[in-house]
Image (cartoon, rainbow, N blue to C red; front, top):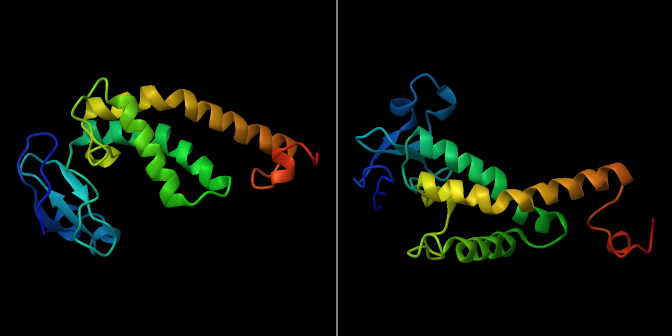
Length: 161
């Protein structure tokens, strides 16, 4: 298993058990984490020792959380409308990569994933995606107020009120 590199200092992380990393969190004892000597960390996919991304410190982790909050509603909206999850998310990342490329020329689809981003990259995701996420939130609010089902094609076309 290849150790991920820390996004903060560039060193390779070491695999540690949840009880060592979070001794006060019994719910994490059976999980695995990649931890860097600088203190940065990242969890693993459930039931594996495969990193969810690159280890990062608290400021980068906060920025990544904000990025997910702005980006995820975009591809999840397509899922709500009946599109498959995997292709919807992948298409959203392809779009995001194109939007980020002018600022981060080395960004490729392989490296364009929020869990692999630096703090600066994650904050750019927020700037790019927030206006679209706000529109998704407005559409959802309208659907709730008007009792519309986004999966019903007749309602989307205005055939049925």
